[in-house]
Length: 224
Length: 369
Image (tube, rainbow over all chains, first blue to last red; front, side, top):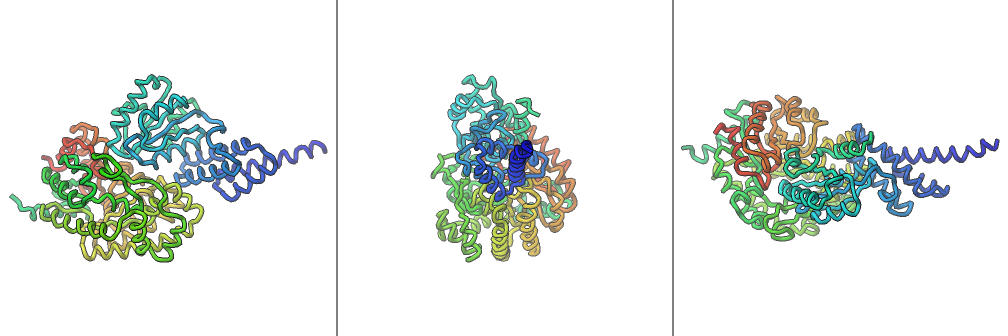
């Protein structure tokens, strides 16, 4: 009997956690908000709740990889995740959640387009990477500062304009000249980019899709 | 020597043959020349970006040096109105950007959630006029300038013997809404208030079709430019795509083609998942213009004998490649995708930093000269 009474709340906790993971994975916004509140009332620590949400996000990433989900679902999942994290109290999206590696990303200077960049940062964070988003029209000095500060394993540079190719080239050359390229891989992507562009700007790889960035980064980190 | 009018007709016939899936005397080659005209003529980008008539002047100066070009997408460009079609603001050289910069659309939330109710209340036509004026600073004077520039540019192009491909620019509701709301916000609307968004789109498409048919009646353009950038297959899951994208493409295309006007499906991004669906559109009346993201070989495989394909010389190749690479790429496209139902062209617009020798190589691959 004592075992049974001990097990009941524990099992209930597991069920609740599973409900939370499923709500996140299935993009059930109202169910998720309700469950987060419930767990808080039960005294479950915020970090534990975030970890369950992250588990749900991993399922979202997997479904995206398997083409069950598309960008629309990724964006919605990121929105729900942010909302839940705010309800718990604080931006826990990247800081405290466990991550595979750090990924710094920005749209190169001279280009203010941010959709492509946002797609990649969303997909990378869904796949367990700590993402540092530098924004758009990012000067070389900001990339260098972010690399020195966050020590990322991978940097992503995005553009939508062919006129930004020379900026990418200069930025990558400057990162190298600053001695920061040794343990760092640089990915490029964006509407007009292809392998010709990657060769021209001196990037390690060209990513046609956001998923390419994930696969390249996971492979680099030895993650299956 | 042929007169400019004879050249105009010859070029028009060649493109028409390609669009209607006939056999032209050679694969036609065309280009959307906008900002590149300023590069080529060494003109001021600030002036080019602010004046439709000045842009037309530089475009025609450019075209004159490439007599084998069969058609241009448009005779003039007015970036402010390009942005207006997506309910967004635009930064221009000479204003927010330094001279020599390409114009850029600003991604921000200009359209609020309550605007959906306003559209339902007053209709799309009325709503957008207020929106242009109040939120984008584009009033009646600017609209008049645009209309006049369009008419005058059209006349000048005809006089110069170069046909314009598109003369009316409808869009499906998704693009202006996604532009106005911002991509991320709009995507969440599709989950949080799908019925309202659908209702708004139904109002918008009816008004857009009515306006488009009015312009077609007056201007009799070769084709209507239907641009979709944010509704591509890799952006939306099938459930959303089938509700918020495809029905409006079909509805708009059917209304336009019923007038005998071709539709230029300028569909950016990756449409690979849904290529087969394009067979639902009228045969020999539409052109799939690919920006080299959708697989042109899959387009050929699925749409051969049903829809003309335009494109899709990659922008990076035009900007960075060598002329022999461009020539070889274009020759391969002509061999594999042509000779019927194919128009050789840059994917999307001609990049601002296209090398002149690469542009020549593209044209040479089609003309043999």
